[in-house]
Image (cartoon, rainbow, N blue to C red; front, top):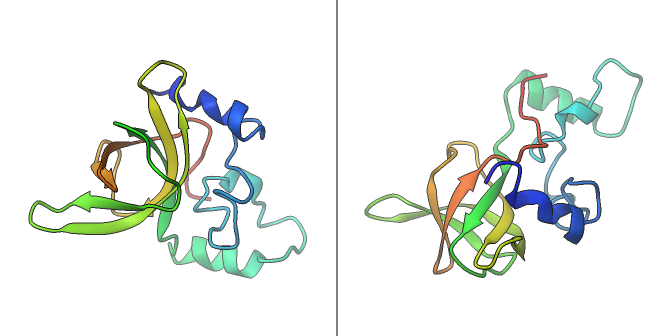
Length: 143
């Protein structure tokens, strides 16, 4: 799916393939969780939230990140992302966006999930099975 499945962001969000305001960019998520660390400059003057962002970096305090999710069917934004823990399901996040992919039968979404989940983990959004994938234009490197 890399490079192909998330082309939908250009069309649906119209924000140059970035997380969308009101969906992935809300008061509930910070720029580090959204994968927009390249937009943060800790050494350039003062800005609102600078101390909070500095603390998150210093103490490795980012608790979740934005993932692409390849879905087996339609899913409603706002639905919990559940990780199959073999005996019990663990709620690990929330789906923030969903659209049909470019090909028939492709279903893709974006969602925030806790840091301990990893790429290729199988998750469930309601009854819909999904696989976490990296979103190619986001950055989670340490600052």
